[in-house]
Image 1: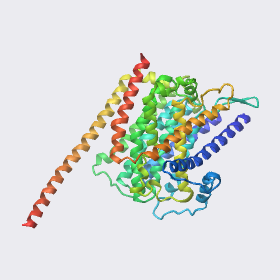
Image 2 (image 1 turned 30 degrees about the vertical axis):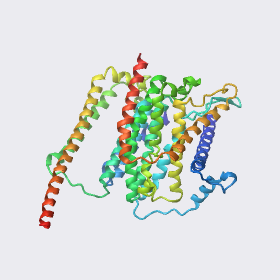
Image 3 (image 1 turned 60 degrees about the vertical axis):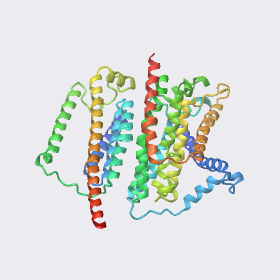
Image 4 (image 1 turned 135 degrees about the vertical axis):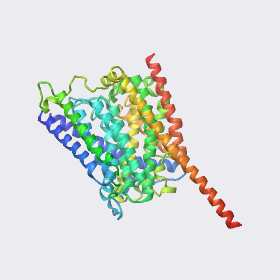
Length: 197
Length: 332
């Protein structure tokens, strides 16, 4: 049991450390890497709870796909460390981060109080599988496709909407650019004609 | 307990030794085979038939000067070769490479870790291999490296999906995520999943070549336009770690493909002579590697837009259709 506790605290500390460094460090690539560290530590926590499937999926989806995309974007924009991205000008957007943070904190406290409401409130009591098959592939699949079918499908639709939205925004940009290009060509055409004449 | 630890350590050492030697001799194999296909002789000076060439290469690379350019991001630059090298080796932790045997009266499993979500573990590890390439390109502070690694990440994101979907058909039929269970289900040659999943097999091979950045999908290191791509600025042992990593990746993908589609270590006479299971496994992986090299000697490199079109418009729909059709038949 002591080894379990040690592993829990080490990975929990690493996860929190990674998350903190991620938002405080200036170099965007280092920031992504700290997020990666945090996710890896979270995967360890999942696996320790007996949810091997969830832990591995966390790595496949977040570490293997989403963070690679983040890195890709950071590299495409070629952001280097120390660039000041500026403060948001409106007071509302400056204030909103504290509001959202406070809300999340309140939620977290409620969830922890709710789940630890039983007799065993120690950290060790919360570790280990809740149910024998907790987090197995079959269990997660069953839950997703029966109890939580509608939320699951809705999430899918939400993601689809986001993708379509991204494509629409990208397309609109190119149209505007095309108009600009056309204008540019016309102006140049005029000027060259003037030169010729 | 102590006995378990010692046995596991011995197994790890054995696997690492075999895999690293395999990597070294894969380079020899590649040079010899490509040479033969191009009417050349290939390495022939070091040892008989040039068999000691990998050793000579290793010694040369180790004693070369390690040059670090001025404008690199030190930490990531130093870490990148290791990050690309380690995931390639980690895959072998779940690959069963032989039949369970009794040695000195002890039952020994010929796999390092027989976890019940081994398939997912393989994919989790494979998807992490890209970080080495991306970070190498970004931290080198050279435009060729950066372009190479941007290409590489775009390519891997595109092919990752088809790669994952290509084996879903097999998983539907086998109804398990454990690699040893998969092998157990392919006992005779007719049970091999290559016959029930021919499309899945072709998809797997194609995506595997793309995932390991090998010809004809080797755009990240297209020497005619990008010098050497993401490892342009690397030299000495750091460079060779990328090199070994690439070959270890090829070996890993071949070994996993063998388990998924070609029955792993299964083969004739393994019941009577258990040691034959190693031989069968080796032969199958060797065939995979040979096809890799053959492809390199045969096909010209894709153009970048062809690569993207091929990935998104041909492979992905094909993988989805294959999955849906297989699922349909399994439910029936």
